[in-house]
Length: 171
Image (tube, rainbow, N blue to C red):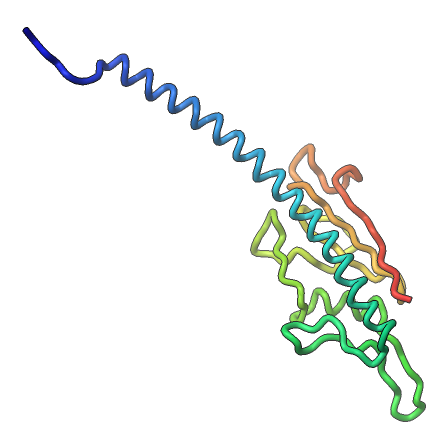
């Protein structure tokens, strides 16, 4: 009586085929998940930037001699400056805030979810995949524009369905 313990070639092929099918389904589901996560990350960075600028600038309305947007407790922007000769007080402008937010001393450390080698916030008037573009449209108005797609064909950043736009008033 012969007692062979083991699997037949057919049984092994069936198991490998089942594992292959499960892996393919998993990869497709994972790619959809990561795409949605990147889209949500761009939207979150957009919302957080608006809240951050509004909260920091509100400190100036409480105390115009304060320094806002510090990085690690240092640097930042003075809410107002006084001319030593005339005594005239000049308040921080939207342009100064934008310049600070995209400069080397920026307190923001978010990365573009579609290109993690790039900062998420940039000074620009056009949308780019995953970028939060900020622009001082006047001395007291900042426009925030975000493209929350990968920018590939069918998902262009020029489509308004793929953009968020808000303004922040600096009064």
